[in-house]
Image 1 (cartoon, rainbow, N blue to C red):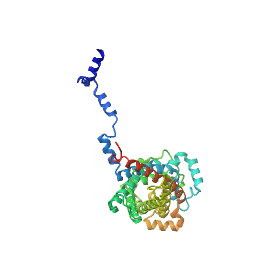
Image 2 (image 1 turned 135 degrees about the horizontal axis):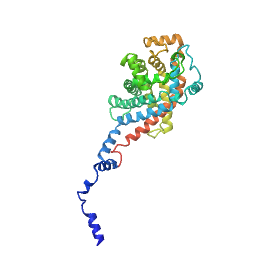
Image 3 (image 1 turned 45 degrees about the vertical axis):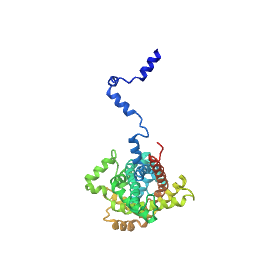
Image 4 (image 1 turned 90 degrees about the vertical axis):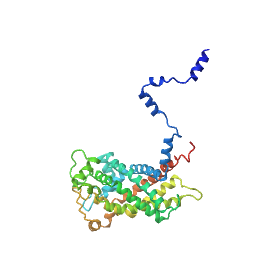
Length: 354
């Protein structure tokens, strides 16, 4: 008899009064904590959106930028310190090893990471826009059908436009990163450091107020764009070429080691060809910084002054630590980009058995 009652109770509809006995907050919490199944309409929509090629490239590009910059942060800062030294300013005219030792002794591990937080804040959107816009321009301008191969020249053009797009959106963070990288360095012309150094936001506000408003945050963008456009174009063009060349016959994709090699080669080629523009960019970014003494009137004037005072080597200052960092930087960037992009593309509900 008791079993019949239990069965009857189990099969009977739940009384409507029980819903009112549970506090509303508990109901909401239960609803929010309920796991969303892969077939949930919201999950399907999100996966379909993220798996789109341009969106996947955008998200993967941001991840790739953060990974690559953090890996080489000490060498990135050292490159900047080398670049902004003119004739007669020799505080960091040392070998790479000795300069890194000097940085460690004077500033500790924080010196290695000085400006990296700002750099990551800058590089995530920068890299995301760069990779995403490259995919967009490639599909919009040149692909006759989805996935069609482009010529090297077409890749160069798409990469150049993508570089200009990414710089335009993120340049203020780049100039602030440069200021943060050198303000704690032991340059005699900067004087003694007193008190706590300003952070990213304080530096940006001070530049805006004291150095010419909005234009101050875009000082040096012309030499930057002049260098970034061919750099990014060469980077994409060379990587795609090397990636194809390093793919074994019969395979669709090279393995991870071959991707790392392709990324390292593409970065080295692009950086070497466009490095003088990077030096000009750094010099213009600190053109009005007190004590550094740069008063360039234009790009031709800057090139003339550098060649007269420092010789041709002046246009390649800092290239040694730059080349040391470019291999692990671009290798890790391209590998992490491809891994992340493939993951996001694989989220497509049409391609996955839900």
